[in-house]
Image (tube, rainbow, N blue to C red; front, side):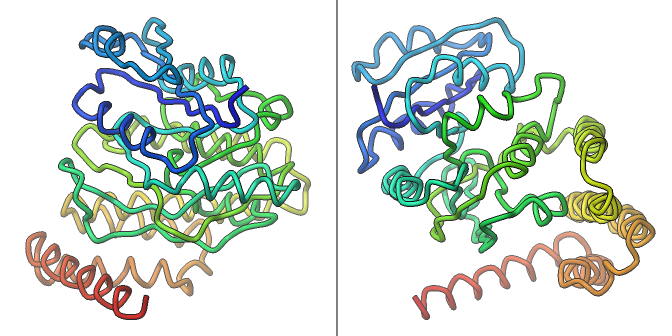
Length: 318
């Protein structure tokens, strides 16, 4: 039996899938199987997979049913003690699996371990942004307010967790991973490898671009989660909605719409007035002010310069 099952859901992903697979085959940890779940693709994935000679790679085909069902197919077929998910357009650094396997092997109480994430563009080049979180242990309260994991491609999970909490909810068009992390966090500790070992690709087809589906799914996850929590945790519901609205404000900023960003920032304040004291709210307010003053192009220039200086400082002190 392999130690790790790598599950890669794929839907018309041949523009990126070969590079994604290559990043797995180049891992320093080699005791794994790779389950590519073809979710009813109309591209040449079947013919391409037939030419892959590594015996650890398997293709599972199903009719198009969405990413949750594709991941669930991977879980059903997984033989490994640990399951690592990887979207078909993302990449891993070579030591990603090795460091996560060692982390879980040393900490039996941990059900999920994630890594820091670097954002890359369509060509695979870093954009200068890194998602880095130090949150670990009993993370449920932090997780309901803010999904620190950022992408499912950074996670490795004990196979037994799914026996306890179930599989991904196929009714969710978005935020199905956040829903899963919340269910796991209610029973297990989380861990983090504090290195940017996952690369999340940003491109026009990212699921986050479909705002209405995203809003609907996030509301479903929040309401479903708070149906079963203890009474002393219900106060976190408004905080969850406040963070949700701040996320929508940032999406509005990315589109250059400061008026809509102000609208969502106001909703965040109405849900949880104390949010105005948080660093995230203050950064949002600064971004809105910059967008109003300099316009979308000027704002992008200032932001890119800030990211460049941040990366230079990280390199100087590393």
